[in-house]
Image (cartoon, rainbow, N blue to C red):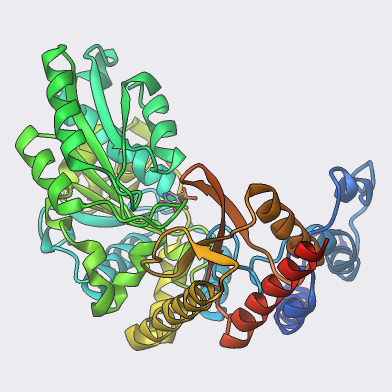
Length: 480
Ligand SMILES: *Cc1c(COP(=O)(O)O)cnc(C)c1O
């Protein structure tokens, strides 16, 4: 027998290197707190540390892992640091990482039920669990006319909702001959940019997306929505879609979904509700008011990959009428024909999303829910909200600082009274220190600092230390 070189990693090597990789991650989590949260590298630094040409011969795994530590890590902004308070959390967890690893190991394509039945059925089942955990209206469960699916992102969920709404409004004609009606869509001026992107991709056109003005709390004004819909109808447009936000990215504002929902129902508009980050709060009954009005929604999404300890990517997307979504997105080329699909007895998730192929993402969500239990998840959500509220209390008591809005949940928008330039300098200096990382927005036309609590390992001491550093640095800057 000839000893032909296979080039593959043998099972024995995989076992050894696999343990080393897990050790690497565990070591990383043990020391991530001590690393500068915001990566200090300059554009091009990471590439300059890498060889210009790919290796002709394979290299030892140890060398690859060493380069992760030495050449890649300096260019990483540590989203898993307990001192990360920027943008929104992307909180990973042990069970999620391991679920994702097993998903990689199985390496299945879950586009059809037939391509891996358990991949589809676990997803349907876990999404029904999530619907129970949040106490979503029954119409979003697979046992009724609706159901849930895991999308890669809230952006994809919004696009799918737009496409389903477009086809519902045009009797499936847009799919056949392109969209000819002047369809108009509605969202608030504070909505996430993914709604505008979706409107562009879905052929609605940015100019036909109406950005409705907001109230003093940055929530959409339903009176202006109703007025604009009427004006558009009079002008010969076809209002077809509205997106409400529960927890805007900028300030965590919560749109009045019950009022918006009533208008949408009266006017026959598809209502999509985007709860990307704040939706997780509804795990706790005391925060479930963020779901008020969801019984009017045609679709709803939130991101376990933001605040529910599940690694990116995992967006839970629920629809009340799955047929509307499937009709909009279904395709059936000959090479995918199979008996299970023909019988209509199974779900083929390729018809619930933009791409054909799909990863086994339900596994990591299932691992997370089974590890923490509902109780564990509630515990951490409560803790994060309490820490953010405590932080807001300190801001309110300090004469040099003010809250821009009352924080509804885990995001605090605040500023120093010294003006835009001062706040910018304060944020830049703190972020450059590496000790913490937070970001900004503009509210009331003023630079506003955002402090978002939601990292897996953020504890009270991290929030306290952050506030101490913010005050100290502000005092230093004020002294000049
Ligand atoms: C973060 C965010 C999004 C975008 O989420 P992706 O999953 O990255 O597409 C959309 N809407 C809101 C309100 C968000 O906060």
